[in-house]
Length: 468
Image (tube, helix red, strand yellow):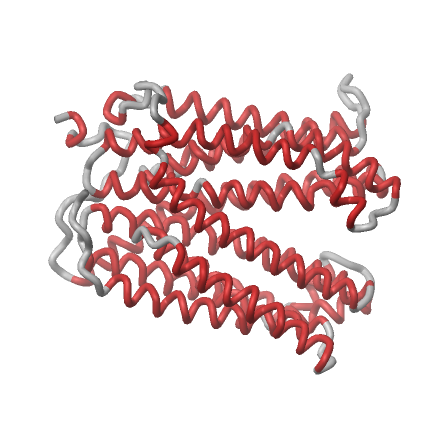
């Protein structure tokens, strides 16, 4: 039976009966967790570096152009993040199939979901194309609204490509093969640096496009990455084992389960993005210094969160494989190791920020008042880093078990009904200012990680359902 065949070299399976001794099982999970997480972390950080390069290149060319690009990116990134969340089911369902050694079923997930990713990208791209109304509604100045809308249309052309790449990348991560995505992202950063500088400034014989050059660079690179990753998947040495070239007939019906998982994840990410957007607006109401300090601190938090994101993705795959194998004890162990490891790593990353806040703040601003404000916020990171990273690991562990809406509801409660009211109350009613906003984030993250961990304990104690 071809779907029970051992994969060829190039894949590192871990589906055999588990070691007898507990310390061996812990060591195995830790080894696999970091083997999967490190390439994902590098790839996610690579995405941030591309944005940083855009900011530096355009900012040095034209400050107005940078303002246009930042405004254009706001709705685009929200739509992209939502789309990525909607595709999370690909990674989960692939890991389940791999866990039960049904490799044809794993390939079937990818074949069913690739057209869905393309259709989703076209739909979200169409929404992004028509964002003029949002800029008018939010009362952006006329010149910003005009130029941001034009840049948004360029970025919209790359949304289908971004989600096609995500579908292929999630499939490879579900197979425990995240290295291709990492390599592709590193190469993309090299190309991005060259194209950004060339198209923004008109260097090396390229047209001088200003901020539009950065937008075109992003779109071009997204399509290069999508086509490259698509070709990589189709050209896998063991493609026949997964049936990767067997066509896409019946894809909507066959993608139902993966889409169902993705709906919950997309809703969760969308609500979290909306909640943090509200906190950004609160910071703006507190004044320029508060908004600047908030923005710098969130940039640092976002960068460090990429480490948690990589560990959380690896956790969902490890839990998903054990779930597919119907090994409840190993599933629970994979989840707890992922959660605890993520929180410890994030706490370790918070220590330099805690002990050297002024030095780190000075990297982002030369304004003494902004540096002082940012330094006061960075000392809270030993609380926020581990709890925020931990809630992401916990929700991914739950996704690995096939949980859909319960973690989404816990997420929504924590960030919509706890963080926003707590942040507002502490910042404005108690007069703590921007510090109150970050205490609101800390409280919400603590509530989230606690609730999700309790939910995982309940789910991992249940008897697992038999194969359908």
